[in-house]
Image (cartoon, rainbow, N blue to C red; front, side):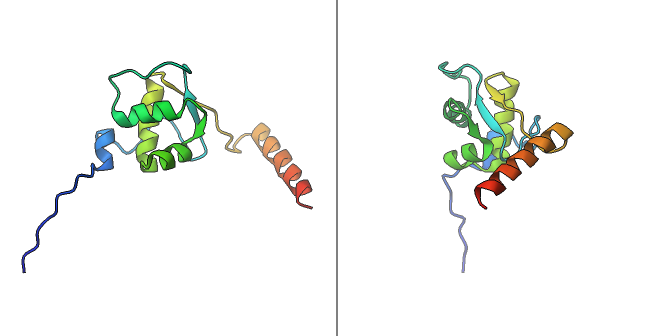
Length: 119
């Protein structure tokens, strides 16, 4: 019995990032991303996946939304978004992590408000 390897037309995700697996920016799934200059066309030097991310982020989106919408693995999306941010093409919105006292207060107020809604 002989086994043949079938050729796949599918491109491996790591090729989009040049083999890199880590982004330069701390990005979480809930991190919001938008284009830095709304209405501006993306540079023609970008890879097709980066152009798709740029166009999708004309409206503010979470990293998870971008990944799901474009069917790109989350890790690859993180690296590509980070690359776009390095070029000042997208803006990475600050994410509340709950690590500072003021952020904790905001999260606690939101939680109390939600609890009141569902009582």
